[in-house]
Amino acid sequence: MANESVLIIGGGPAGIEAAKGIAGLGYKAILVEKRDRLGGTPDEEKYAALTPDLRDTQEALGDLMDPIKNNPLVEIHYNTLVTGSSGQLGDFKVKAIEMGKEVEFHVGAVIVATGFKHFDPGRETQKYSYYELDDVITLTDAEKMLSEHKFVRPSNGEKPKRVCFIQCVGSRDRRLGNEYCSKVCCGISSKQSIEIKKLLPDCKVYIFYIDMRMYGYWENEIYWPAQEKYNVNYIKGMATEIVKKGDKVLVKGEDTTLRRPMEVEMDVVILAVGMEPSDGTTQMADIFGLQKNKYGFIETTGGCLDTVSTNVPGVYAAGATTGPADLEDSVSAGGLAAMKALSAIRALAVPA
Amino acid sequence: MPQALDIRQNKYSDVSQEEKDRLFQECKDDERWSHILYGCYECGICVAACPSARFYDFSPRLIAQAVAREDTDLVYTLMNDSVWDCSQCFSCDRCPRGNSPGQIITVMREVAVKNGLNTAKEALEGYGRIIYKIMSTGSQVSPDMLQPNAFPDWGHHVHEIADNLEVWRKALPPETLHTIETGWKVDEKTIIELYLIWHMTGVMDLILGIDEGLHMILVDVMEERLEEAGYDIEFD
Figure 1 (cartoon, each protein chain N blue to C red):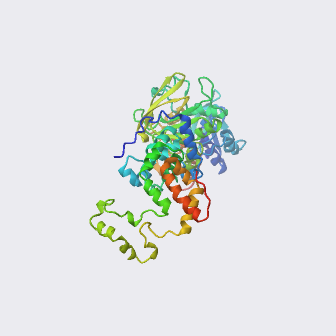
Figure 2 (cartoon, helix red, strand yellow):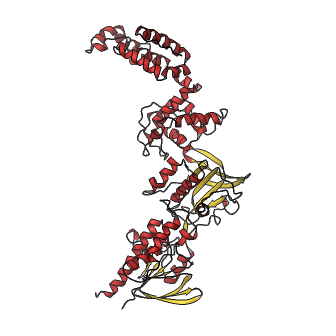
Figure 3 (cartoon, rainbow over the protein chains, first blue to last red):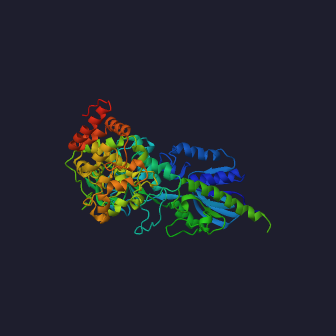
């Protein structure tokens, strides 16, 4: 008799949605989370508002996780790290450390939802001076400020008059090995530019981009309003270097559509950092023997028609664990992983 | 020869920022503005459709992106050195964002004229005769303008037509075209109404701003005919 419980690793949007799906279908979900609270990266990195609808992050995450809290079919283990696994579909024994104590979970299937981490712009994009200049920050640094309903120059606490975003930092770059587009940064930059303009209507906001990737409804939900209503300046051209000039930050690049070089002084520069596999994703790939793609994300096996199955039967991957993903992708994949996991377990019980 | 448009440097750096901002604000205050400018993708679909762009260093995209970016230095340069290269055909009205670079240019030209920019005066200098014709007679091209010296490229038959103009015109079936000095018979009531419209809508003030001489001779013509028609109108 196959074990019909499903272990979900990671309590972010994909993991929460997966647990919700398992429990909603009447099966037991065991959700393990390394931190002492759910919500994943949007919570940990203190996102102010979600892209694209600008809904308050905590409120939206609260609604997402409400159905699994106090749900008798969902067992949540906080401060828990998965350390080993044995067995196969229908009979996995997964070892973990929970609050310093070794525990073991017996489950029929596993969903890995350990997500991504933000690209570190100091690592190989030194020309952007992230570690040298206080006023050069990342999208996540900006989110933290915006979640406190403020936006100031980190160097002196003053309100900035000119702010720019630089897109594709750590993405779409053969030199760095991150050849992929991180999918969400164009949208998040545009969302943040709206939030900044709402806080500081007189501040000039620029977005320097390679191409804006605002697919689907993000186009008219964030891109158009940012440009048309909030007068955000989108300039096609990448910054090659950021240096200090007096108490300002000088951004050097090319204004390609105007065919002229560009050297502009900014008060704050926001680097639109992309996604890389989280440490948890790398560790789970090793523990479960999951195939990774050349960028280190967990490879799914079904191409575009199966976004959650891995090379190991009974182990599924959801959300930004498999590559750059927005919230829509993540929760969709979480639900799909729940359905696939239960389908595989149920299939064992049906005589051939 | 049309000159190359120079946008690599701030050509009008001698003009104050306040003045450039003021002129741009005047464009933005135009009630058409919100319907002709949204945001610019800088995609170039307007340039691809633009006949002027084939012959001049002219780009409706540049106009749209400059105003969308609110780059007032560039807007000022274009208001002086570019907007007059547009043929106002509105082929550019195919923008995916719903912009109308042609109409943006219409507004920029009006602001340039209203503010008496020197470049506007220069651009319109050659059109004085046409403006005089339209505004004094109510019609533009008239048969008596068809002279061999004016249209040498039309060939020898221009002579024949010019010599016997009245006969040719009488050969046309509609009686309203049996005219030489105007394109068609302009009704007395029509021309009086046109004069009144141009007076009341401020067109005459615009003319005064760019060409005092033209304004003076138009006023002479108009005042006389309006007086005959029983209107006592004082032009500035």
